[in-house]
Length: 139
Length: 139
DNA sequence: ACTTGACTTGGACAATGTCCAATGTAGGAT
DNA sequence: ATCCTACATTGGACATTGTCCAAGTCAAGT
Image (cartoon, rainbow over all chains, first blue to last red):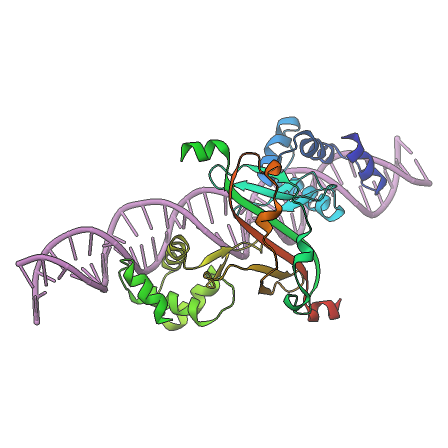
């Protein structure tokens, strides 16, 4: 966790209480929080932190490549602190739980040139959908 | 296009002017419209149609499996009338253009059992990201 | 300790989507 | 052909998520 703070300082970040708190929240739990959830947890540690700051900080972390923005949910963006190992996501259609997964093979290679329409394809995002064990049992 | 209307009638849909217009808009252009764009085009044909009705109708069409909801954009859901051929999407990070693509191979098969965590995995959504030719030239 | 420019704040605003009570109407029944 | 009624539509209020900005605050270099 102090790794993250160190990296940020190294990049010329001014280290404020607010940024420290946001970084701690993200680093503390390896789940995929929405911006509002990050804000709620940040407020618990630093009551006067504002929503705007949380949004700003998350945006900066995404720009720096320290966290990944995931939009598996159509409602709110989620932030994935596990940015240093490439991975994809498995989402439960019932309860919305998200797990990181590591498929074999590289989906980028599965897109033939004839299907690229001249695009420079640089990234691929894969979302598996299904039911987690408890939601499947409840259904 | 009347295919779609026939299928809907067969499912017990009450056929109203509003629903006909929404179906025509979706069927007319095989692009990926946002709900608001659908509404704008629908208004052109039937000025008094309301936003709520467009949202309702789109939601029903999704439930019936006649159109697919795509969330490549983090802003608004888009609606893809090409629901009967499985396909994925290629999105331009510059201008937001979306193309349907058909990768070789089945990404579902790339997810080993050990990475499924007991989930019943039923679907996979793949979004390729990159730059379209004109955005790449402009950069 | 001072200074300065980057950071934070709070609140207004924007975009997208949902909900609901009142009203209208498609399509079966008569 | 007309009537009934359950289903559909409407418009506007509300909710959620996110962005923007002017004013105030503060970290860190000197």
